[in-house]
Length: 96
Image 1: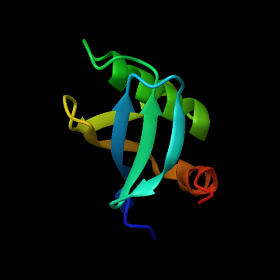
Image 2: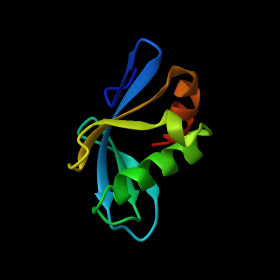
Image 3: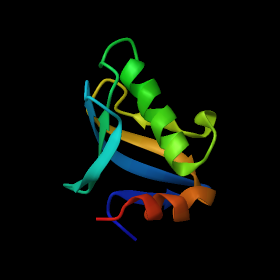
């Protein structure tokens, strides 16, 4: 298992470094044991967090309600949780 995510009970906790205000949403790789994600929304009023959750949900093929920021809501360093059922999809999107 990679260092940038861990399994806890029925969920996956993903360590993320978010880069809000980007030109488009994209996963740019893994650095310092964190999944690096560029987010097109600005970091104000929770817009970047909402955009991050929506982007990850679309990328993994799960519902938006299944992607939750559990740590770092006002930081670039975040922990996001998704259902364990999407572990294979998570691994597939990382092709680095």
